[in-house]
Length: 260
Image (cartoon, rainbow, N blue to C red; front, side):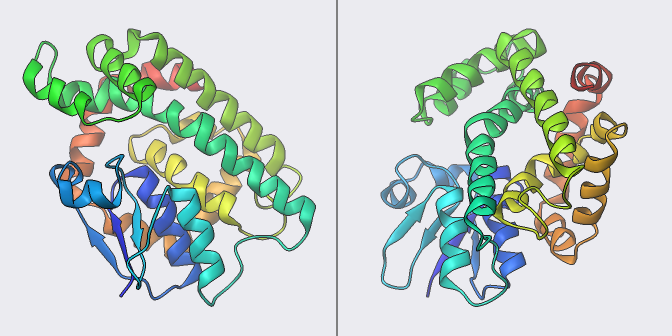
């Protein structure tokens, strides 16, 4: 039986999970923890030690959330999440490229500067921090995470990430002022991929950043009202969410100022 390995609170895993829920695919999920991600068993499936990972019926493995989202849409029956029109599909693909290359890394920087910084403590357990950094296979991600944990929001990575998120919100509002969804008249994988970023910003109290962006506010209201979004939220560990919210509390006003 095919299985989707996830951490239900992880933003990249939530991309695949939201696509799965919107598709209505009968694909079971396996919840894993951070310790399992570094085990030889998991690294044999996903050498980068990230979620999500999709193991198919025949034992083949797919990694990378965007790849898995497309596979789910194409392999299972249900509503199509990719436009048939070539131009609309190109628009969807462009959003997904921006999300993967710009906006997810941008979200990672202030998250490391708040949540991970509090988790590890600064000054904190250097051995524990070194072990976490050593588990990252991407050099740039490792460098960004270490600097943000050590410097907090004073890190240039954090400042650059917040600027990129501010750009994202304005770009979304501009596009959504002309059409109801990111790639046209219907919800697509682009909206599924963007949903976890916006959900995380909302969870940590940063939704006022788009209160003055009417088209984006309308999109978020419609998206968050979908039963699939409620199910996605309910999958997350409530205790971990409390820790996440708490880590952003002190910096929330400063973050909002930079996002507006």
